Image 1 (cartoon, rainbow, N blue to C red):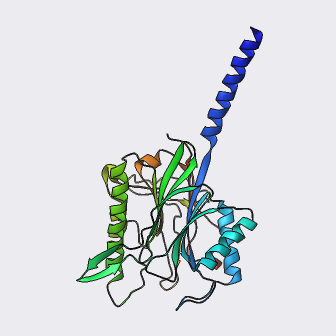
Image 2: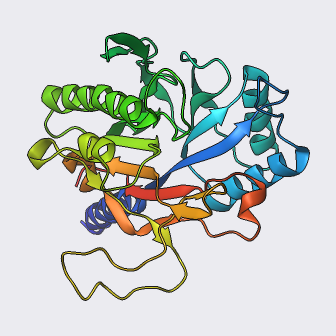
Image 3: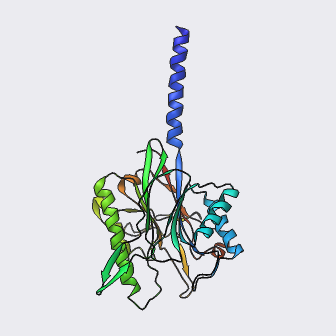
Length: 308
């Protein structure tokens, strides 16, 4: 009888420990535009210096991502060098997706500690603008990532048209059309499963109240939640006006030409994914001499690895 009671207690303790372990399991998702991470010059884009590459590694290692979306990665040699250097420094992200879009100089990449169990690279999307056909320049990386046996999520990484002007069309119009294409992919994911765990992230190259960002976020049940990461500098006071965001430091990009700081890198969530989101572990990295690595800063969001 005593042995039976001991066995029951032992099983109960093991079960409680398992629940506690699952409850404590979290994972970190990061997006980072690494600004022309090229191993050799390509067009007007210079090769990344060793000092800049080292600072990129330092920045990534500081946030310790489990899943890392990168923008402006050069050729496969540059990509593999970064992946290998991170592994040598103790951050092994063995699973990857490298998307080659119409822009042959820079690419969108996803690195993951967890298996990528499905891949849907979007590299041939196009749209008509003023009677001319254009292609989504960098494409979209769409992957399904399995964190554990009970939890998976879909990630779509994007890098929309920059604000640099081009002769063919207005950059703002091109960015809006790319945002519409991205929104179609978001709608398709949510239509297939209204409770889907979906993260949409990357360099969207526009402000929160712009038409492209409003298009991507959408509204209502199919709308996305903006995680709005901010620096971990002690700011905690909410806005005195509930209609306005708190005055936290949220900028992610420095544009030297106009000497402006803005938030153009985003981590957006479906309502299903929002339930696993941990806001207190979501932030913009504030690192000394951050600008040596890139004109962008890494953006971090953390999640519980279980359905909530």
